[in-house]
Image (cartoon, rainbow, N blue to C red):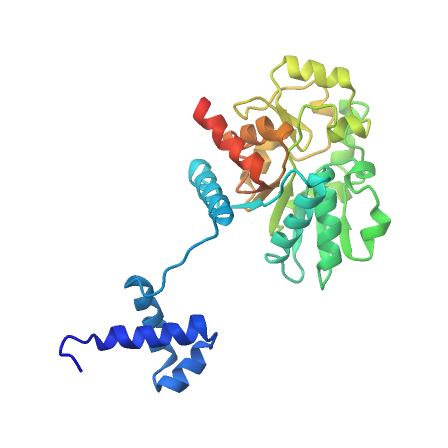
Length: 311
């Protein structure tokens, strides 16, 4: 044996072969090589540092990882999950909703309480999450308006404890809003919001396909006026401009919902939104600091970064 032989290198090479090529467990390697499992772990790390093992992502995966890291760094996000979709996808909201459900599934636990927003993508997310979850979830509504908030409450009720605000999204008067907010059942739900494990919200666009228009909550004229005031989208039916600043609306004092300032104070706020039409709204929500995590599609993620480069 050569005097220059690096024994540690040789051990690391052998451990790496067993682990990455032969698919052995660390305990199997420990038994075969007659060393401790902790020693195996150190050898595998040594192999990585010395270049014995080199990791290469497929180019398409590498691009998504780069986008995720850039978005996290740019906006100080805790996490970003980019869904790999392409032009063959017929229903982007459904695809992103399924992916978001899988993402959330890995973070939930038994007796988990989740604050929930509204919108098509979130409806798909909730449906898929309830189908895959092995135990009951407790869903806490962030606004009134159950008729479009959970479009088929009966279909999901058996799979979750639904804590919904028993009121419309927009009341008939300021006095009616104050009265309903003072009711004990409504106060209880608003109090529950602060103790939930996570908060999932959608981001709405100013397009004619917006959920608020589709469900008749607001008219196209309402949207036109808000657009003239600089609105680029909404979070929880509260509109923001390109800087993420809230736009004062005539119906705001009649709305049953937590405010955007309250949303900022919640921990683990996950935004689920995708599509080219939502890029300005998602960008504004990031600028406003309303989200801690983001789930979106690849094209939208790229456009979000391009917006920063052009501004």
